[in-house]
Image (cartoon, rainbow, N blue to C red):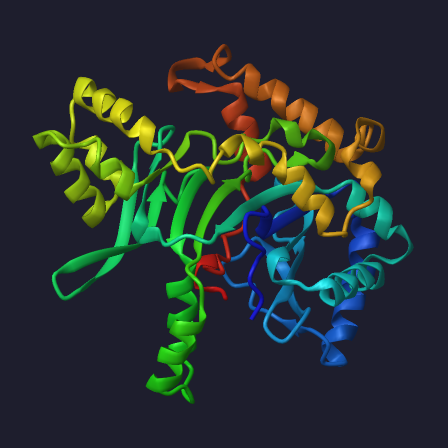
Length: 378
């Protein structure tokens, strides 16, 4: 199985979109023909398009488990600027897989592959970092999120959190932290041929692994590669505390209650139960328990570095000179300008802005998310 390196930020899911100006009808027809030939040669398979935003959908394996999802020819071409989408999991690809993907891109896109890939926009991106830590030994808070959730199991009388969610999964930005070691073991145990003794042996061999992810979905306004600075700063507001150290500082009644609830349902939920003054007092006490291996600022520019590491895009695509003047650049500039005017362009008695109508027109054919459930991947 392919696991990401410890403490190095990688992309656990990437979805990019190609502008209709670049992938015009003639280009789309040529690309679709290549993909259909690959299906005939059993190098790709056609997927159902029912309930999706695109007529043609294909899956192409990059290794034994992981594939590239290609969607092309939107059902309502007049209502979306995106003629084609690509989606895959970069963190699962080895060096040979990345080389295969690049060769595949050249095969699918033809002689204009480099230029077409330079003009894509990022539609969805999950940035992941792993640490050699046990999730049971830490408490996690995301201060920029109000909603939260947790999932875990109870062994005997002790509750053990395995996943924590910050922000709504339906929003354009949310963060998660989970026990990757437990997930890998669960996936291994589900294999029909796996014996209990083998699971126990694998459990003893695997190191603790805490994974944190920052997930951004930019469906309303995908971002060009040379404008990545406009993305939200990954992991902003994310704080991780040592449980053992915190126990030495949270000794009053409120502190003990916070610790108990944090271990059962997560620190985020525990802090939400307090009034503002109590919450800030607990946070001041927790300051001394900050773990020394986590600093969100380290990953401030990690998205650009991780995208470059995929080796799918020319380095010039990340520069203003490389992206300026492209079709997606013009579209993005116009879209951002309209977004900035949203609060001032009320549209009559409906209370809608002029931008609302524009977004309905442009994004009416947004396809449904395929949701490969990254938490379930190895």
